[in-house]
Length: 414
Image 1 (tube, helix red, strand yellow):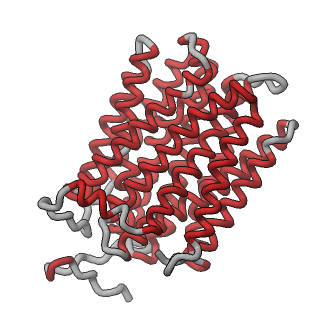
Image 2: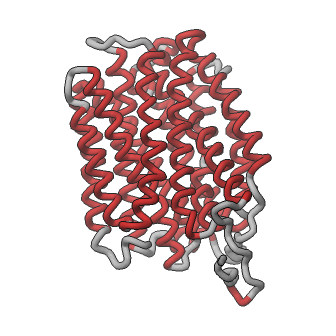
């Protein structure tokens, strides 16, 4: 028997019940946000598989080439500070749909960028637009779905981001072998356009969204997201974890194309098939968190991430790829559960969920920009061991924070 409708703030009409297992609305909402995750992360990270190609095409250094990823993630981080509060006022659905449309158009333009500087400007603008998904995706699912299915749906969404990251990198690497970096970026743009059309058709109207009062100042709204030490810890965890993860894959692309491996862009791109493991790990970890609690699952997942990183120090290619797979499983499990933890904690403290999710994602992408750029410098200075030091510092710091968060009040359920 479904639960009674939740009460809306201020004594207004009760909110309709969230979509439950078996509802068509659940399938449409989960599917649409999954496809949005595919589109956003394919576009965002496609250049990661093209870094050596970009160094040759534009005659830039490896450290400079990593800016093609870092400026987009920096733009995305800034966009979160705008689109998160905006979604708390006008709703999640319009922000998500408009952001995908703009980002897809910019992806098409990026494939025709005439110079390195123009490519970086377009990537920065694209990152800002792409912020629409991480700003609202988790908040939309938590609001529109029944609590009994929201954690698994959020895990599926994070799995979609893994599939998108995989598609962007693998497809881009294969297309680069066939027609260079422009063909690769253009192909990913086509994928993004197709996913955007599907999201516009599938995504259900918001039924349970309650707007933040317009008279609430945005700066006050932002400040509320920093008033809870548990949320602050989760923001720091996001920055450190993502910084370490991106450092591995940015430097890893150069490592696989260098001796002794000497892989082509297409073959090096296949290593991103490990993202398939992440797409499975995230919803599974979400289910485990519902039973065992987040304070247990997140540290264990981070320990798995660290073990995978250690494996990549081995020389045989098979062990390197195995290490990347283990690291990817741990990363997506930790990130999927931590992002749901943010939404639950914000709701528990009656803070705007969209704002809290945006701040989590803001620090997540700040970490990506910093870690990705440091990885290029570390690779140039000290090779793979240098990159591992950068990544290990981030992952180890995230594990320490997770253990501290596990001692907070009611940590397992929010």
